[in-house]
Image (cartoon, rainbow, N blue to C red; front, top):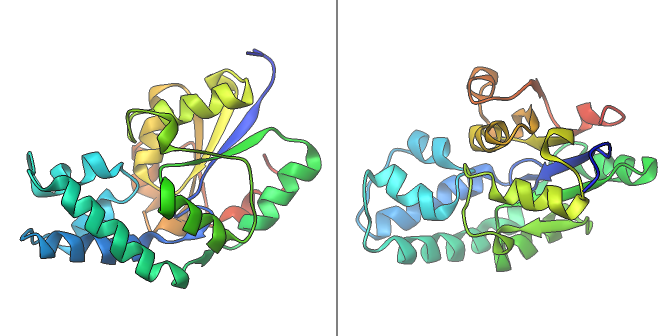
Length: 210
C-alpha cells in the first residue's frame, strides 16, 4: 500500500444515483407490512445505514423478522428502481476521474440485484466494491477500508464522496476526508455534524476538483 498515492471513494446509492426517496418508500412499505409503523422522516434519516442496522435502529430494538423486512424492502425497491436516474454530473464526474488518471472506486453499500439495478440506472460501469466484500455495514468503516485496499492507498490519502450522515460518520472513524453532496436530501448541518469536511450540491460541482 502506497503512503503517497491518493484516491477517491464514491458512494453509489443516493450519491451517483438519485434513489434515496425510492428507498424511503420501499422501507416504509416493508416495515408496515410487518406491523412496524415508522414516520417517513425517520425512515429517511436512516437511509444510508446498512439494512442489518437500519431496521432495529428504526424500530428501537431487536426485530425477530428483520431479515423478512429487509427482503421485502429489496423486492419493493426493485419494483421502483426504474424511476431512478443518475444525479446531476454523476457520469461526467466518473469520466473526469478516469480521464485524469485519478484512482477511484465506487463503494456501494448495496449488493446483488440492488447493486446491479443501481449500476444500470447510472448507465455506465465504473470500478465497484460492494457490501458483499465486508462483514460490517455503515456506519462501520469496513467498506471504505476495503475500497482503500483495492486502490492500494492509506485511508488518510483517500477522499469519500457521499450523500448521507452515515457515510460521513464511517469516513471520520478511519480518517478519510468526506465531501457531502446534497443529492440524498440531508442538510448541510447534519452532514457537517457527522464529519463532512465540505458539502456541495451534486457530483457536477466536483468535476476537476478531486
